[in-house]
Length: 278
Length: 249
Image (cartoon, rainbow over all chains, first blue to last red; front, side, top):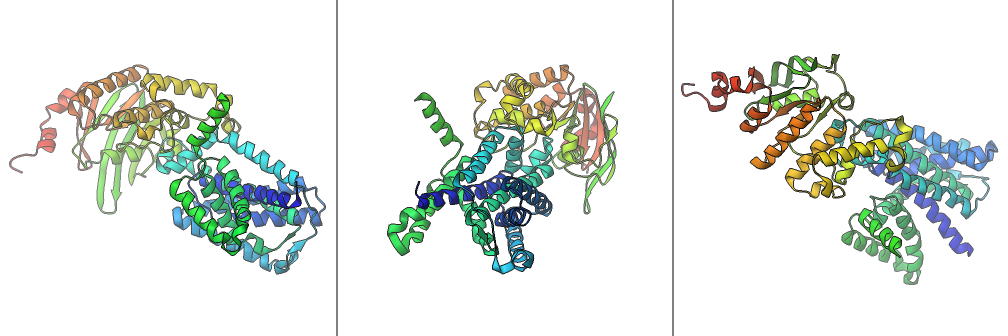
């Protein structure tokens, strides 16, 4: 594989994990526009542990995920009081808060950024990506996921059939934050240099975009969305300066024809049936 | 043995007195009806029992425990299940998924994160039972919200049943159904009752209530105005007055 494509596939893996973190939280009906914040936390914690503490990367990523999960749970509680657009704005505020904290956090380089990480291979990135993908696909068939969908569909009814909606929503924030942190840790060790600007608002939007484009009701949607979001602008390079405009048009067209995103449950069933017959 | 007791329960919304000093009991294995004109406070009563509202005064006792301050999910896990006046099914779920989602978790969190097919044969068996009991087999993999109204009601009842309740609260279970469908449901409720399930139901369909319930409570403007056997309530002048009004008001 050329280094050009290797770079792109690494970006897809990292974006996929970020998109997954949004998908997990969205599965309980909560839209987070602040997941780049969790990603940033993961990137900085993991980098600190590998560079300054000489931890092995895998251990550092797990520790970063746990740290971000704890912060995600803390963020999840005030988020309980907010719904829809208000929650989205509050999480956006959280993301900006993390970014400006990192900007002023001189211990880790502040605005100058942080470096010294060892480069990771594409295979390592996709080991995490694939592992978390399989985990989510299995989880989607579980009781827990069914309960998350119940909260998504009708929170009051979910509560009144005996589900602990508070634990479900807060837990989703924690889990989503952990996945975002893994994405961040891999990002840091792929680019071997991080700065607070890497984890700004645009990154959070990219995550959400990948989920909405790929399909927000199935985990596989995040893979498709992340792939398209990275590859399409590359494939449209022949349009030169117009490529991002063309990309925007494509995005609008997809959403006009498939509001649920490219992949959804019926389409997946159809695809897997065809494969089974063949 | 008493399943549910309300002791002098009141609920005020600001200055509005939705329920005033209501006391009632649901003995085990009985079918109890709550009737009353629109706005009498019947659904408010259900919302108090299930923790959706907090009582302003009084006590709600479930199987000997004071549940007045408990959160909804804890009450619903302690043997109560309900259906809603305006059907509330989960928009993304098939009938089958509805029959799995409300079941009490067994084996803690770790088992609930595994695929249902691997981890929970008992849950699937219970869902299958409910599916057959309500005659929903042919709708198993259909998105429940797309089904006809009468079927949706049955899905909601089946979902409530899979929570393995001791007490079922039914909010207008036969609203919008024809006589035949209502008879069908009455037979199902009798069968559930024979299995030991206690039922508290709100209903406007008088023939249905009169032939199903063992005991009736009559609410009007948030207060109990009568109680007794269906036959006694039917002839109670106070009840007739509340429903029909008096000439010399």
